[in-house]
Length: 139
Image (cartoon, rainbow, N blue to C red; front, side):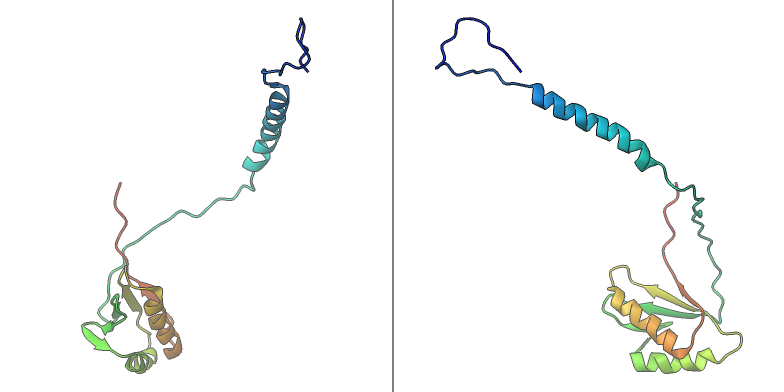
């Protein structure tokens, strides 16, 4: 604490700011941060998988379904309703070996539209579903 030495009247206000409590609080915060940072950086050593994107060849027997941003589903170039889609997928599901269904969803389409196509594939018994995407930029 500060001590005022000299002749000062008792009615006079002290205009100096006492910085001792501020320094004490800052020192405590610094010590807390120095103690907790090494604890936060130590994690369980785990080898994370590496991202690999291998382009696949499209086989003629694969089914290409396109989903527009409005929700219209196309089988190759032919538009389909949801009921027609399920019926056509059921006829494809019994073929051995079962062809892969590749879904090309518009990037601006809500996931609900693509989800309906995935649900139709599930109901029809399709086991292989793939999503066609743009390759990431190189570099």
